[in-house]
Length: 165
Image 1 (cartoon, one colour):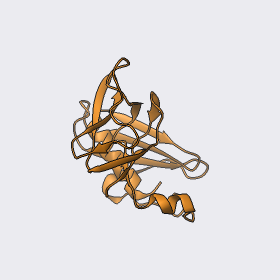
Image 2 (cartoon, helix red, strand yellow; image 1 turned 120 degrees about the vertical axis):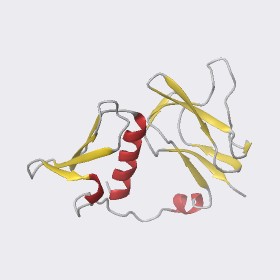
Image 3 (cartoon, helix red, strand yellow; image 1 turned 180 degrees about the horizontal axis):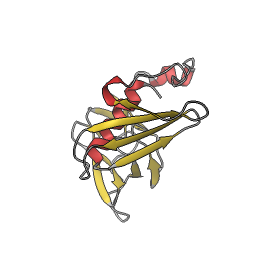
Image 4 (tube, one colour; image 1 turned 90 degrees about the horizontal axis):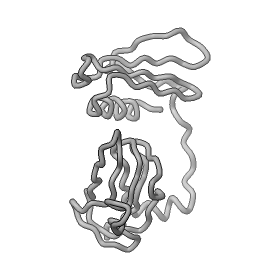
């Protein structure tokens, strides 16, 4: 997990209204707490705890920097990724459950081949019993739907590939 990922997570937690979020992977544990009980103030601390080594330490948000251990290795680009590079990836802005339809008895928002423009609703993501419409920020044509209907999605997970031409 790099600094950009941590900063995006901090912004997401601050906007979500959660008081505390804990993230644990093989290499690192991160706890993000908001400063006030109402969850509306800025995130004030990140606790980074390497899983197998050092004791707990608190790092102020502004000075959190990735360590060598935290950085993911770069992988070489495969031919499939190279062909997808001309497409724009629409990613999930929140964590939740992905739905392609506004209701079970309604048609899907978009199919492969559908032309879209800025502001068109592409899907909904349910988070904490709220259904959030995800709108397109680009114009183009849907090339691929990357997530199955009713599947859980993570923050920043790719949802659609769009051909902007």
